[in-house]
Image (cartoon, rainbow, N blue to C red; front, top):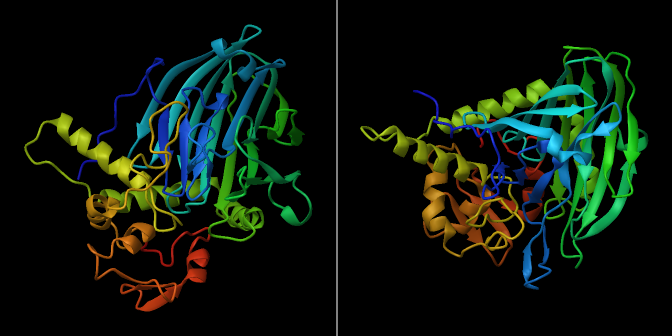
Length: 399
């Protein structure tokens, strides 16, 4: 079977574009045209009062894949006009976003390739890799971390530096909504390839950014790779999410960045075996079907503690979303399409879909338990919390 049809790449940014959407059902990202300049992130079940509508809504969380590139002391974020987008494209087959850009400062040009993904095999993980090459020797600073600037809410824990009981995380952030309705934990680690012996510095800026910084003397045409793994957990699935993110991060580190990418690619390959193929239809219609398949499956996962709104795990300022609200009959038109390519259905969708999936799930509301016929036993509420481990699934066959 041929692979899915990807959208045409973009080579210039227009004001009417929405940023690229990446998600895995638990974590959702809007990634800007120049990823180091930031984006918007959400985590399933994290809610609070909307500052304008004053109703409970899905709220953005600190951006988990913040990055910075500085040449001879000039940072990219301070000179956005000098960061030029060359190409941004989706890879639907692997659930990845690839961005190529160039940044010029003090007559030195850096070519930066960015790979971004929300790992579907391990749904609490978001990943990003910056590959940097310069056309002249220079002082190069590469950094990555967490960016809470401008987010509604506040920290209840900040830890920076790979030391103590929160190792191996470079930084840990506990974040709560303004009403105290929700909270989440975030942890990250950063590694640099291509500069042996370069030691990291840990920076907490006045804006609240938590960054791991590598400063080095870069050589012309040499490749440097900055790799970041971030884990995010909402308190809906763990009472101490800031601690559980560290446990997840430790296992992620053991698997390695390449191993995590391979696991993610394998999981997407399993899903695409259920691809809808339109026999005899023009390629344009097949491309639309592939895009619909991709966006649907980026938005749902069995480990999601709450339902998914019609706009998925996407949020962007001043755009007419449903603020994360879930339609009561969403499983009627979504559950069947999710179940057909998957060995097991997404948990929250199948849990609420009693009318349409009686063989999959029955709800025992009085006892507060869930029974899955596919697992053959009742699963109490505590088991739902255990389900969101790094693996994000009870068996290797689950997507």
